[in-house]
Amino acid sequence: MRAWVYERYGSVAGLELRDVPMPSPATGEVLVEVACTSVNLSDWEGLRGTPAYARLSGGLRRPRRTTLGSDIAGVVAAVGDGVTAFRAGDAVFGDNLPRNGGFAEFVAMPQTALAPMPPALTFAVASAIPQAGAIATQSVALATPGDRVLIIGAGGGSGSLAVQLAVATGVRVTAVDNAGKLDHLRSLGAHDVIDYRLVDPTRTGPYELIIDMVAYRSVLAYRRALARGGRYAMVGGTARALVRMLTVGTVVGAASGVRLGLLVVHEGPAHFVPLANRVAAGEVAVHIGREFAFDDVPAALAFHGEGRANGKVVVRVREA
Ligand SMILES: NC(=O)c1ccc[n+]([C@@H]2O[C@H](COP(=O)([O-])OP(=O)(O)OC[C@H]3O[C@@H](n4cnc5c(N)ncnc54)[C@H](OP(=O)(O)O)[C@@H]3O)[C@@H](O)[C@H]2O)c1
Image 1 (tube, rainbow, N blue to C red):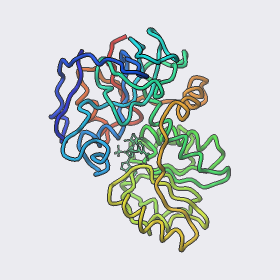
Image 2: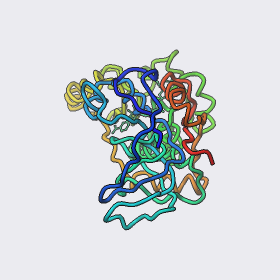
Image 3: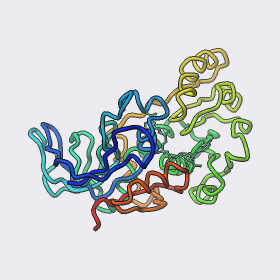
Image 4: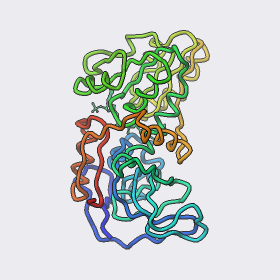
């Protein structure tokens, strides 16, 4: 089978399309023929080996897993011993983080990472949901109706879903991203929008909840934007922001009556299937900004990583 392989952290120039051995599903694993894989920021981080936490899970000097791609949708090709939930021919979707392997024609993944695909969804839409859906669901679960909620990085895969879930929860949403994404964010229901290249969102507010997909500011800046008793949840961002949040953030939060910390997102079907069902029912929309062919995985990663994607980027591994 063919897979996109990289052996060193760096740029898309290091990706090679190679013939590699077909994976064999181990006990408890399912072999999936991949139809679509969506791109997440975690793929870009894994390609470049930065922020530093990408190397903590992916390998310090070199990538341990040499094929990226975690969110997939496809058809079960074979099952390993002990798999009872799936059989060959089932349409499935799931998130294979941190093992990855989705930019390939076949991937073997634990049955616990997969769910049956709702029939109303296309492979492209289903592949766009698992990781971003889990992030959006768990971050918006921190909101209470009536809150003022700031979502930083709102125009990306997780943010676009989080905005819709937050609006449906009955909060007032201020969505932050680059100017090219603000009309899209308004169309998703955001009450206010901010271009991060023009306005520092931590100088707006106050907010009861801040959800930050791309943290890099100081703890005091986030503290300044919180209402009394408010909460700041860092979902992703620089390693420096992470260290500051886990050290200074704890102290500043305790001293000033707010909560500042990291949101550790739980993976797995329990965390993305409810949202997928809402997408299938037409209550929440997945916006696919652009689809790429399998031969164009480097271009897909670059398009996402260089900030040109409005919504999700999807790779069609198997042409329908
Ligand atoms: N906490 C956990 O357990 C966990 C688990 C998995 C993933 N993650 C993290 O979750 C995060 C979200 O991932 P995703 O795939 O949804 O990302 P994404 O699709 O790349 O979206 C990120 C968005 O943020 C925007 N952005 C960039 N810089 C910004 C700034 N300074 N201010 C405001 N917006 C900015 C980007 O726009 P541009 O086009 O302008 O760049 C993009 O629209 C990632 O950081 C990932 O590492 C966390």
